[in-house]
Image (cartoon, rainbow over all chains, first blue to last red):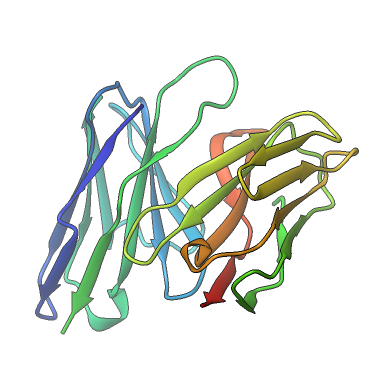
Length: 117
Length: 113
């Protein structure tokens, strides 16, 4: 089946640091990738939709300058949390899908636990 | 925005008990998905229901899609500690939001041995 790899799985860093999270589709071409944020014991909240070769579309309330998304190839999207602060601490999950007829299934990564001290 | 109302939010039961999780909406969906997520991991797709009235079984899990395709339920028979996790229903947002999933609030299930 389709495999999505997310790296790193866990990162701890000081306040003010910028952190980059990678999302790779290992065995298929991901024309679209989604980035989610999840707080403890809550559901997934969509942050942005990233299409290969174009600018990401951010959900309402998500700061695009804070959460930089790049989707330069069909197998890699990155999320950079710029100048991270403790309130950015969360579980970040990506998913990937490929363009096709109708809605295509999303394949999820295993998430990145971000802790800002 | 199409909302999925999931209930209950928390469920704590003893091993061997049965349980049902509900996912309701005022919108009609072409399909609905159920996921299970364990701490520190991404959600894993359990099933997709497509046809109104459809019932799918996955071992002790029974999934049903409402006749009007606005609601769904997940029933677990004889729950086991290994069933513990966050259960999420989700549906494609539709319209111009092609490919985007809308998630319910989730149900945290704890099965005690």
